Image (cartoon, rainbow, N blue to C red):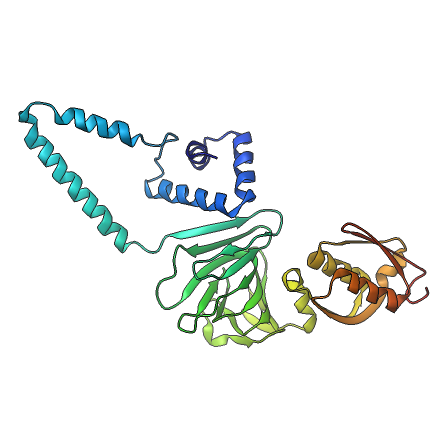
Length: 322
């Protein structure tokens, strides 16, 4: 995509086909999104008045040179114009110095992101579907603040002197360096955090005194209307299995397990014998390949499985009937 395409899109002048092409281009790579954000910042800073054609700097300079050859009676005017330019340039740099750190934005559409958003401190964020992350171009001050709308998995670079703070519409998370999942969609009545490593403090936004401190394997749920917090059971670890491959099943049905395996491995389980869906089991897996999970189910229930790419077909007589 070139400069004109991006400006047309931002100004709302792009055709339906143009908008579709732009959104596909944005999804294609992080470099494309960074270029879009760079042009977007220029567009917003200009009062949203940029034109599709990039300014022709060489032509403008030639015009100034031609005007400079006019009779000397124009010199006082040119001198005043030059002074005005110097004043404006100085004013611009003064203005830029007092502005807050520019914010960048990463958006994710209908599918979870395969690539992480790399933050200025080296932290990584994987966005889930329909999620948005806003973060500064560089972290300044005593904390590293980002804002999330939706769901994401974080791997936060450790900095003892500067805590990492995530704000959502109703919840906040404060950490030094850790990995965890966070869900806080604005239209959901709940928000949750699940820790994979390290420790985090989770609390209602603006109420840090009500925080719960969570360690590895622990999670908590915030009820937005009441502001109450409750700790989650061990099976909540399955919420972040898509990144961790750590699975916990406690008296879970195979139907429930199928949803977890889909998120963790992208596998689609099909029950050729519908009765298998109701079979229940207790087990845990720590970064095991999908085949190891399926072999455990085979041993538990005496069932057979066949894999075709990401599709897995389960069949057999029923729970432990062979």
